[in-house]
Image (cartoon, rainbow, N blue to C red):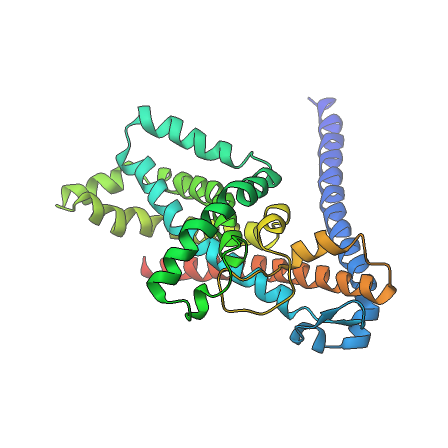
Length: 312
């Protein structure tokens, strides 16, 4: 046994060193990424200052750049995506866990998970060649007739691209992630807890609302923030259907842009140093937004955990 102890100690040291090295590598990669993007954006930030975030101008000819229209498009398309995807994901997850028999739940769950494996460019092509024409020929004319052509939400020519198509395509892409996480969360609820609720006379809906959803509230919030992070940084699918125009508009059918679509469209043609630096500044803005989402997720989950602990 004495001969085995040195070997075990060396194994522990090797494992500990490898773990520390991997953790340090992750931190170094993150720091290096942030440093490169920040250094690339320094000329634009020194030229425009805080006004870069507050300005909607984007004129490469006049060398006048601002991030507001890209930030606006990113937030609006993400909000539309979550507004559609979160309720649908919740209903799908509850159906698969609480109502569907195994012979239906398994293939449906597998099909939803396979949606996550579809490349984003396929979603974009489908959105551009199939979904956008349907929107321009059916949905937008219907909404304009229902709400009136003067309604700012549906104003504009029926071209089929804009914020609403981008948000809907994003919802399709977010749906597999949020619904899969929510389903896994609901499956972790102890059956004895649900049986106790039914034994006290609760209906299926009451047991689901008061027991299943309350028990998995942390996981549900995590799923929502996961979808938020997925939607904010999506590039190719949004680039196909959003219109890629730097503008601020209240119409859901007006062309717009996001930070990611702007970077994908314009980086290759950015020949001027200030133009390129402004794109780096957009990338830095997107990086900060995603980091803030992660921090907000962590703080929100801690807050929920404290409240649940106090309630117990």
